[in-house]
Length: 482
Image (cartoon, rainbow, N blue to C red; front, side, top):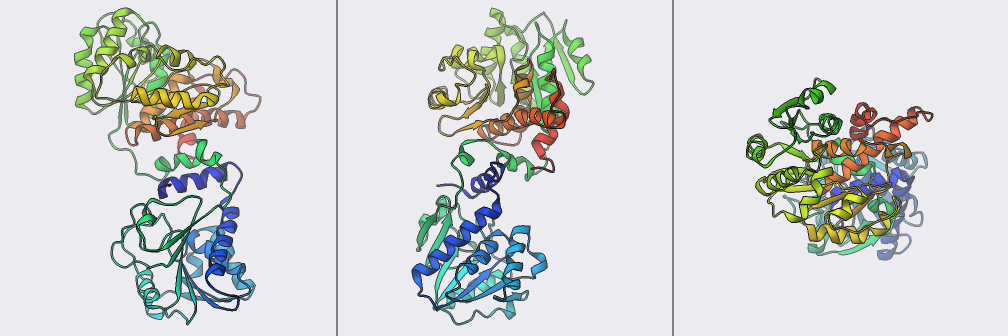
């Protein structure tokens, strides 16, 4: 089964793989027509009641595959308000081909014709809540009709995820849904057909532009703060992570670092707020204040960039995770302690191949080999109890139950520092999205940023991790090509 939100992402991912929604609409419409032919003989009267979205577009296509039937198509609303280009194209095709069509803007004017079959294509799986007019009145009249009612994807007024309805909903005899069954359809008193419309399996496996819909269509982030605990032997890593978090939507980005290197980290960007603590590296006695700060402001923590692996530092990382109960991205030097810690924190771990093995995960020799070992990485994440984003040529993201692969990126991204931008990007997203979703989006966005740079100048040489920062917002929120 697939929830409606995930179905929208898969549709968009299919387009990203070269299977556009227009092509899928042709297949969907054909499937609806097959369902009509299964319940009515040629020559029967079929009334299509369509909305102004892609659900209606599916039904417009179906009409063209039912030339042996008497077809009438009722559009609820004005044609100029059809919401997508592809649905509008298919409506125009019906009018140009002289099919029987009618526009109904006022529910009082809706009067379904006498027919053997009614096709309900008013609203699809992406619409929830009580029906409004003219759909509410149309649903009532459809329910009073003696015809067999076929719903396209989900009966209008029914929540595809729950099967519940707030008020009036179409009482369908049959439902033809696409690609996979929706969770709420099980509870309906209707025969459900799942139609394969040609979506590649890769649209679910590979992270793509569809996986970015939660951030692209969601609300603006509010009071999202990143708190990078890093630095000591290295200064660039925490600065890159903190800047990437800002680019990914964090309102403020703090870095907690040892006093001797704090000025250097501050020097990388005036946008960062650097908080120094005593000593040359992280120690256990620093942890209580760091945890208190992070939890007081509900910060998303990035633990690890540039920390180093001194014994006291690793003990401090372990102590931090055992005492912290918020959200954190664990990267680099802090990763090996994760399996040893009993924590209430929500973690996203971002190991490379070497770090994955050090954590107790599978040993993978080749950068090309992560995808082939995805099942083992999933099992490791399940045992670990945290989301794992394993970095290589193809990134593997898993929460122990769901696993996806991100192929975004370029060969130039093997340069040092891109893992730090990835950790910061995931942290910026984790403030407003669930851990697995944030890891998927972060992996895609970080890789997509590299692709955008390469697309703008294919001769670009010597890619720097800092180059990704300027294009990360486009990679996350989209550009004209996505």
